[in-house]
Image (tube, rainbow, N blue to C red; front, side):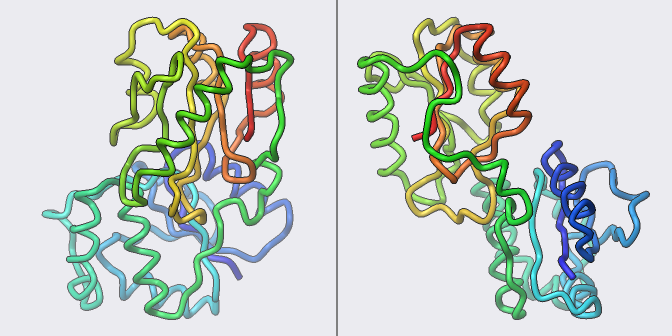
Length: 261
């Protein structure tokens, strides 16, 4: 029995559909904003403040493993109703929330580990979504692009695992934009047209690779085209690549390169 902590974004639905296809016994703790999994069998809506209830459910289901998928947004802490374990654990979650949404999940993982519950990778059932090294478009990066990619890679190696940056834009070997807490789309929306710029989305050096892997999909490629970028770079087996066929078709049609390093 696997416990699925599901939030917003299409990725959570993709994971659920794969678990169903594999006929794996599962239950859902719905952390989405609008309770989008309410019609699913074995779906539970439990406040993030009620850790006692969450842990009790996991143990009642005899589940030794859980998985996080989809974006879990920061709750309104002032309105949360807490149970006993919630009172005990909530200070660590509140401290994490000051760093960002991903840090909240990391805090929850620590709490679960403290209760003897293991968290597995978000792509545990969907390894096909995490691509290996190679070019996934007809267009390939040139020599100057390779220099820029190395610059971006070096930048990620220097930042710590609590930093919220998961994406940046580099051009001619210079970093011209970095991602804020709002995410990649917001970063790109603040840019003017950056012809020949490259979007690089890599995990941080000490990032917890069970959650919050750098992700791209068709909308990412549309944003890349809109802002005049020439390519996107991801880390081998440390990425989530959604709608592969549609994305590669769009990239080839619009002469955008996709590089997995």
